[in-house]
Image (tube, rainbow, N blue to C red; front, side, top):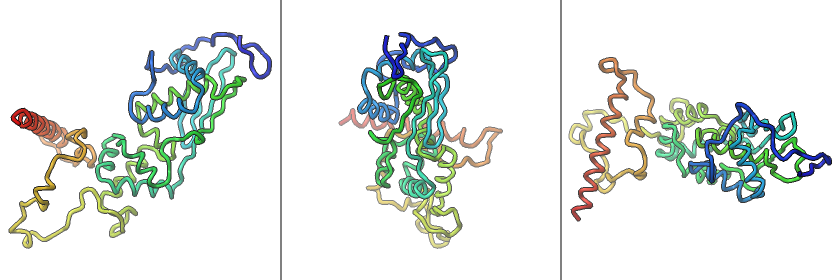
Length: 293
């Protein structure tokens, strides 16, 4: 049996828990999306492989009783072999209001990033945006301050490792938790991004800032009568979207829904199938063209 720091002998198996948080993954690695895998890759680079293995076993057995995430801090309780569960904490730097103002401005400057975030998606390029502001999105080797009340000599112990793996699965379910851990929750971020839609990062009429997603010049119709139906862009620029993996109704997700209904059906619910049908027809036409070459 392993010996703890205070000399007592720890039992080989932890006390079984009813109703604990269990990892969905039953074997192999944990973490399915790019952001959770990025977090796990960091852990597996800096942490002891043996304790991480035991931590995965704890996570899959449901030994973690609860998990609470707030700005800069994750707290959890993990049931080990002693009657009382161990207290676990994982701290990172939470960014302040000024730092987040710069991040929001940088994110809003990229129309596609802004649209994806407003649609509830996490663009992979967001990590580069954070780095460009001199603020890492994910904690590095020295960016995690971890503690556990257990007497284990090793670090991180299996209790900490179990919490870290379950945290990665929580990131799978909601990527905005990564940002909330850094200090800005989902709704606060989305509200800040929506406020940039008119090109006014301060949220004030006439204020300065980058052009918004839907900013267009307000020209009287009489001055545009001759070219009103022209696109205003050269044919060379009218190509496929920069990110072919984006959903066809991305723009509809990003915009605030109009309070318009047709036969008691919201307008967006009527438009989404049309956007998807057009995208499917475009993809089919592209495949036929490729086959004809």
